[in-house]
Image 1: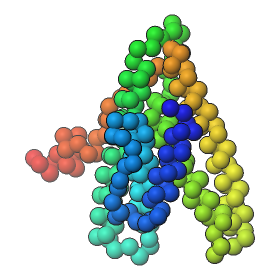
Image 2 (image 1 turned 180 degrees about the vertical axis):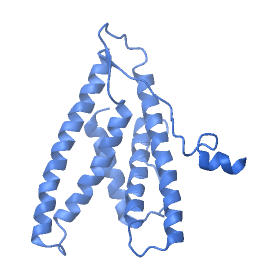
Image 3 (image 1 turned 30 degrees about the vertical axis):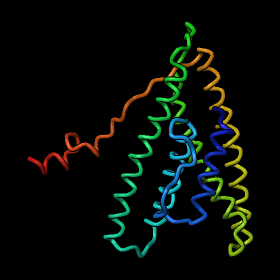
Image 4 (image 1 turned 90 degrees about the vertical axis):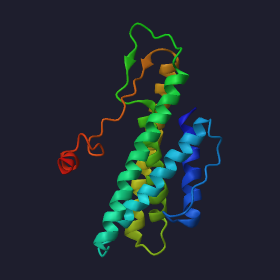
Length: 201
């Protein structure tokens, strides 16, 4: 896998979502469930739906009950997002499981999947900033400002993509290794969140 390949899948997911542009639309994954591409497409779809959840919940006149329901959906989406990152990292653990590490091999500050998570979010930022940079109903000043921001995002894409590809190359060569730290989220766990476990006692 290369970062460019992953980014193309993210763009495909984003483009498909915006055909209907609805958080309630059905999801269909075009890739074989046994492949990394399947995980990448699913990962970005989760991110894309959550992006629009975050837009909706910022509606100033939103009904409080609807806002609470939406907040629950965002929480569930965050859990799905974390799950997908772990699935993707499990793929890389298996892929590089037989690589002999060099004596001076080091661990990276983040796993491959968390870097790919950032690339997925960046793909969304680029898509929506392009929309704003060309929105006919916006002012010239708005479009110009968004065009400048888009240039920075595209530079970030190059830098992040380069870093991801280098990390995967180093892992294949035994220069880097990874670990997967399973979820330590406490607020979803009834035995760890005091608001939840105090209600049960």
